[in-house]
Image 1 (cartoon, rainbow, N blue to C red):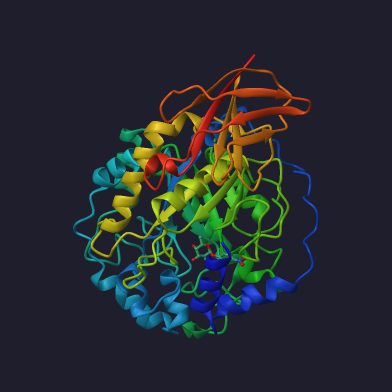
Image 2: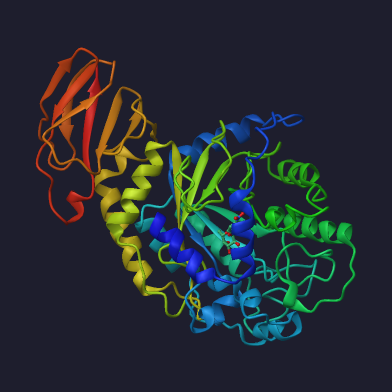
Length: 459
Ligand code: JFZ
């Protein structure tokens, strides 16, 4: 994680995001979680939260006009290229004229995600660039009206996910580098050369109109994954997002839709899950995840290389072993794992990432019972690994332990301990304050060696 952080810092050196990260680093901890005053989740919403926690694994997609530039030959966060390369909005808009991802096949995507073992999908409906990847009456700056493609990829993806039994969530950037009413500007996007004027409340109306479209045109939606709030964190507009009103709108249209917001603060009233960007909950290796862990369902988002949007030159892929271990480490902290891929401008998924997703699916096929429908286990995360649990069972995930004996401060009595790899019995010894397992030898570099999973059936 520290490596990733260093890499991120290097990639961002001198950019607005870098400034933002540094500003954040020294700041004092944010206020403790506000009780969810004025928000009582409905029964459907609470059931959806259970579903969400049971799902444990989702695929994140960053796809937009920026995908065409692929990071412009630089390492770094490719979906930030408009800001990074200081492209004025009037010029950036030209990208829409030739956005034509003719190889896009929503069913093929859904098959890939399904085979990966994902249970839900989160896709960018509008990123900071301000371009709607869906049919929108709220602005002509959208994929149907402004591109030769003229199709609505979110509608196609919604249909494909629905068929495949995947829930679809929409990422939505509150921050907007294109809309003239996103004024005053926040801490980013100052090179967009937009007019120095605009009507903030009209911008929020626009945002709400788009959200209404997203929640009424695509069938049942898993939820909304907000981002960009932090752009106004240190401005006078910090509290002028009309968040509660926006959240109420979403919940009134779809009570089961789960709302999360990547604001890196303790959850605000009306939110249904808490996210940790590229971090295990509680770890804060990125420096911006300073909010404490709330009672809400948790999710950790992670990239496959150093970028969320498709980056032409970033081949620094995390291995499948690393990603599986992150998934498991998240599950052991009671959090979901949301793994990102940036589709290419032609509409296909990056083949390197497709392979990784396939390999994740192979692992989950074999070891999925220790992840899906589990919650964080009775033994808190340890340097050697984590535990997960389901009724009557505890799964011990041994990620890094060289010795044979492993002590667990587990008070429940164990009836039987089984190595998931081959069904072999694992010796268990009662100790005064727990149990001791005698671990089997690690299984090497291949899939079975990534995590020694031991299932404990409780008495
Ligand atoms: C945000 C986006 O800017 C990024 O492009 C991507 O979509 C990611 C999932 O979310 O990244 C952030 C958001 C907030 C902070 C840092 C990166 N922050 O508050 O420090």
